Every structure is written in C-alpha cells, then in structure tokens.
Amino acid sequence: MTPVLAQEKFYTIDDIYHLPEGKRAELVDGQIYDMAPPTRKHQEILSFLHAAIYNYITGNKGECKVYPAPFAVFLFADDSKYLEPDISVICDKGKLDEHGCKGAPDWVVEIVSPGSRSMDYYTKLSLYRSAGVREYWIVDPMKQIILVYDMEHDAAPAIYAFADNIKANIYEDLWIDFRKLEF
Image (cartoon, rainbow, N blue to C red; front, top):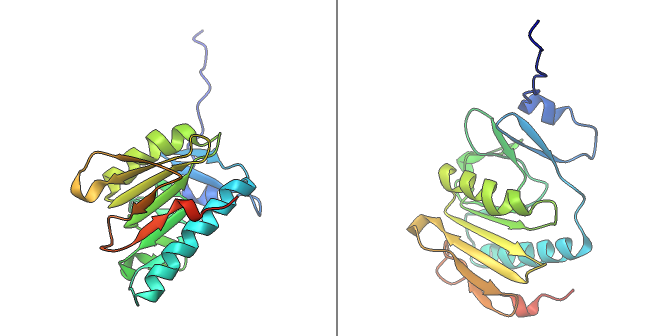
C-alpha cells in the first residue's frame, strides 16, 4: 500500500474574508501569512510617513490617495495576491472600490517587523515589481535603514539612513526628512 501524503490546503480570498474579527493576514498563491500586531515603533513610523505623504498630497491638491494599513490591495485580477501594505499610494482612482485597491498601487511602503523580514525584502519586492508598483520603500527600524526601489525607472535600489532626507521618486518635490521622526 502506498502511503497517502497530506495535502496542503489552498486558501482563497474567501478564507481571508472569513478570518475572525481583528485577525490580519495576507494571501500569496494559496497560502495565508498571519500578521503579528504592530509594535509602538512600527506605528510611530507609520503615522509619521502617512502624515508626511497625506500633507504633501492635500497641500498640493494632488489626485493621489494615501492609505495606511489595514488597507486591502489585490495585486492581480485573479485575487491570488491579497496584501495589506503599511502604506499604499494610489493615483488611479479607477483602481479603488469599497474593498480596497484592485491592481498595483503607485507607491508602497512596508515597515519591517521581525516576523515580516523575508516577506518584505524578498516576496513582496518580487510581487510589487511584477505587478507594476512604481516605487517601493522598505523601512527597517532594526537596521535603521530605508531601501528605496524606483521600479518605474528600473534604477538600482538606494539605501538611506534614518538621519537622511529622502526624495519620493513618484513626485517632483516630495522629500521626507527622517531626522524629524521621533520615537
């Protein structure tokens, strides 16, 4: 008799929608990745960046929208990739519906947590690049660095410190001064 191998469960977007209230997770190719609650430092960085981007957009009467997590991003039409980036900037309002963003945001920021390191540095980088995200920032509080991927121009990633003033490539004149970030 041949042994029966256990089959791995293939999850769908319906499984995401049926998670218990308050539980956050992401879906990548049929696998659910649980998300740990964010730390205070993570939330400080998220608030700082969201405020800077929001103030820039509204101060310039911009058309883009900025959303902090939790905010649903369905990268591809088949709903096989459900992510909740820490910050999503969407300039095409046609991608927005009551569930979130259908397609690639223009700019995504992920703030690295101990449990999300591999996902943020490798899996999401690949997904965002293939989906057409124009710019991707990885903010790593433990290493005190920011990696900026200008994918729209296929540029090599730039590495910055928390003491730098960093330009957002999707805008002509948005600079975010990380020296103003206080914990």
